[in-house]
Length: 147
Image 1 (cartoon, rainbow, N blue to C red):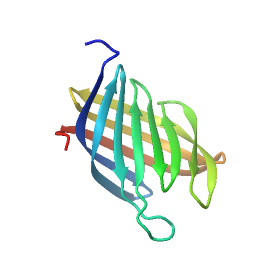
Image 2 (image 1 turned 30 degrees about the vertical axis):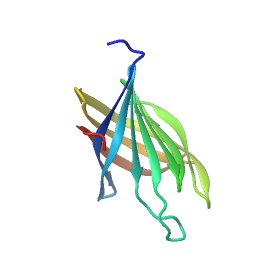
Image 3 (image 1 turned 180 degrees about the vertical axis):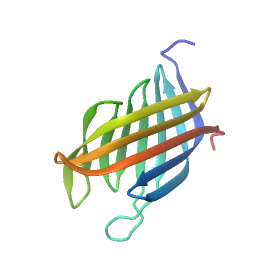
């Protein structure tokens, strides 16, 4: 299959985040787009803005062989990148605050089987070069029919 073709398909997304003994789980439907060696997963994260109104966030996860990038737009804007053994820059912006951040990734595992994918990573989050927290994340993508 030539690398310049684009393939889209529906997916179910399960994102599990662990931080300081707390676990949060997000289950949503999304869309996957394969562009050459890069896989893009897009989905909406439900949420509330600071005023209590619904403010969903459009999330794009860009997956390469050895790197992961998460880009959010909507009620908040942020970008985080992860590569095992590397400290990479990012940012966070909301209507009320903005700051630079970086992620130091201790472990990143990407496992693909046809159109299913599991990504696991652990990282330290730094805000203005100060350690803000340690996270363990797993992301599971399963092909589903597009609706």
